Length: 268
Image 1 (tube, rainbow, N blue to C red):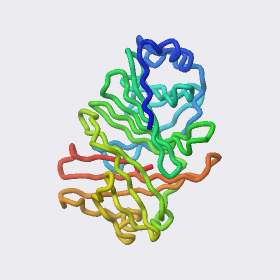
Image 2: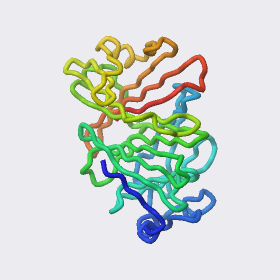
Image 3: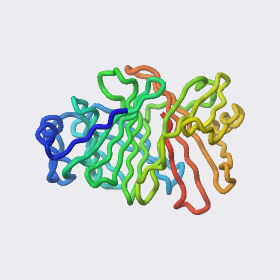
Image 4: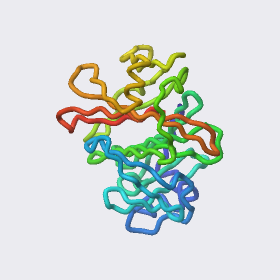
């Protein structure tokens, strides 16, 4: 992983890649978006921790990236260039200000791009498929700001109900705390064995183990208690098959009696 840091000195380069970067710029929702057409998925399902498994369909206009989240019009914009992958979604997930940082991580051939925006609080994670594909896939988009979170899954993903399809695969995920978007330590890895069981690892430490039976219950839509028996876990297993190849993604929802503790995690 090699983080990208873009500061005031790089504004000229950023302007070439993004048509504008800084001082409000094109990524201010009140101004015209960049002329480059949106080349990501046209339809997503949007989830929020506080609303649980209730999905809201989201359509992205291919002409200008126009999208509505909670009734607010935004413009999704992305660029793949010499500075890496850059994504904006309007305030506060835009690139104005003095700097932002970003980078990529890969596991099992899949790449997760991440950005920390100019306010140094708001973050985005984007699942972009294999490292070598010409156009980033944007299979999922995870947006976190201190007052709101959105988790968008490509609506073309096909739900899977058998964990054996995930055998011998590994996935990464990182969770950000609600209300602050501070990082919850290091990324976790979900590592599947040859039979379709899995464990969640934090480095070399195994934090949780799931049997094939448990994972298949989750895949079928059942809930399982959390390790501390205070909440319930749901998981949705997906496969994507398109011009970029075959990819897998898992969305985990953990809910508690106090909904402010709910969280969503995307494994990719």
